Image (cartoon, rainbow, N blue to C red):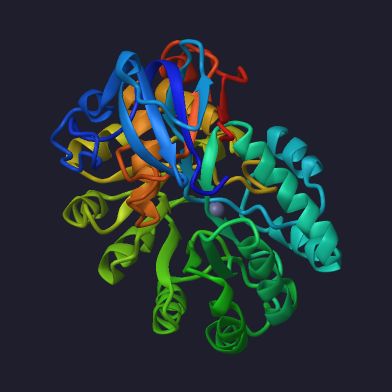
Length: 401
Ligand SMILES: [Zn+2]
């Protein structure tokens, strides 16, 4: 279809998340989220070569090679899910049941997934990954970041990233997810591996490096260890991301800001100094919140009002993973953010689109301004508010043009 143009008509409500000129997202945090949505009614847009070439009133839509009529449905920018762990095998539903019966989570169950993932063939992992990406797309996600982290050997981590690269450019090396069971006697040797041969094998398939910086889990990494992992990744040309402040107060957010990481993810337990540091790093480091985790682990939600009030850049993502949140549904994440974290529907939608794009340092996705990728999510609804208003309903899907 290269070169063919498509006019998408009959858009009852078009949320562009772009400025009034339709060109660029409104970056000014002082602008209320409702205005940042850039809403148009009875709209149309023209797609050429996979990009938005024109948008405006349906009544003045130009002709194109093909026409699609959405019958008054709402369109929002496809969700940008900037945090997922989709390359894995095995089943941990029993662990979920145990947790719901009162067993606390400390990050140790990752070993179960690791064993199953190592044992799976390339084709098995590829099929599982493809199925999960299709599920996400079926719920409106058009950009997804995928991490390694369930191989934890040189070959298994490189394989996970090679497979992830087949479905997304946003691949993240997470060899420092946990210290694998066989390496627990010698953490220093595992750190040498992660920052040496494993990084070398993985960097060609990765855009990012990540670390589970969580002194509250004996399986995860301390500040000193996390710094070493991030600096090694940066030295190999990778951008930096951090899992931090999930299970208790910790150094993750501070470290992410200090090193200029693109995002620190979880942010449930932040000190005043952490919030201040993140506010000062707006435009560089995003605080990515993952409320599906708190929902699935029955844990306290992060205080997003405190972050927004301080001027922190906020994103919402799924953290889809087999241990603490086995859902990639961004509509569910938006609904949880609104219902449980008291974001407005507008704030939540901006965080799940523009916010995710910023967390991945992308300006071509997360909005539908002219020139952006034509990643459209269609809603079986007249307005975007239905995402939170009708939780659990299959309202959103990525539009195949
Ligand atoms: Zn994660």
